[in-house]
Image (tube, rainbow, N blue to C red; front, side, top):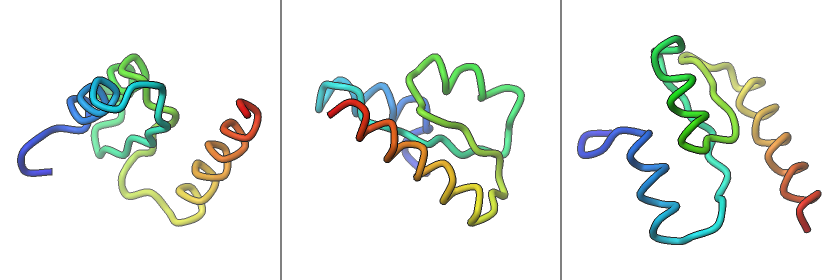
Length: 70
């Protein structure tokens, strides 16, 4: 992302739309960004390169969590 990092995107989006949107954070820097992403409100964290199976699994978890909230 050329203009903004993922952590700022999470914070800015939450401020703009309110609520708790589900973010799946993906980064090549597992150790340094994991804790920050989760503290910022990421639903899940995937390390690059993430397999399609891992992405689908994370999205399915988010969908199931969203259904439980309704």
